[in-house]
Image (cartoon, rainbow, N blue to C red; front, side, top):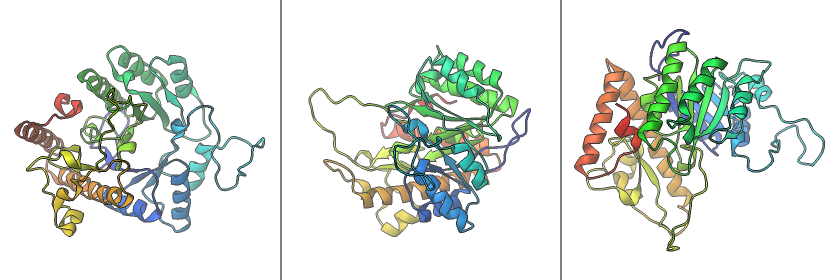
Length: 350
């Protein structure tokens, strides 16, 4: 979606594009063309980006190094030009790799920062690089709570740098009205200063965020790429819940499990659902273990098409911000009508 901002104030909406985990070049190009841009993840994303660069198809593609996914002692990734041996090799330089490709934004490879790791936060914001960068901050959602959001905002003001924000939690990193307020506080900083604030690996909260300060919302098309996850406690009774594909429901502005969709929510006019002929009812399936790959792929295709249609509607509106507010209210009204809980961000944004 439309334009960038100028320093000293926001001129227009930020952009929304797809965030992809492991994918092939075909899926990357399809989403780039659909949204006008696509964010690829980590080493696999770098490989895809290099293939696209050789084909002259890199326009609109950017990269999240996703180094925060590494558990334990960080190890440099094995990519083209390095041996997969335990040798004294120089650490892989993500900034250099992105700069060499000429990507539109070069992001740092910051680690995950737990709540209260203030010294580590300052170190990430103070680090110098040979080219202009957006500093990746992978933060636990608790940073947005009432106790820490003011500290975080003050550090961003002091550093005065572009930031790419990744939020982490076992389920929802913005799971309270206080955290919604904390995020909006950061968005106001961005809108006021003109510094870029990107939301990477985010969910549908990125849609209203582009109207209030976010320069980019890269929304994940799979559950693992809509936030940075964490350990989830097992049920006390030992019962393992059924697995069902999560699908984007445009009228609700968020994802639902296929087996949880209620009457009136399964209609969808996206090209994939029209071709299948059964709307979202085709995802009303459950599995004891992992959802099959072909079902996950079908869900991602629907999600991509349906999300893009929502964004195109917003972009075509005479007043995009007013259209976004209307969509949020319609989603809340529909959820109340079918007795469905809405995500905290949707209930607390206005």
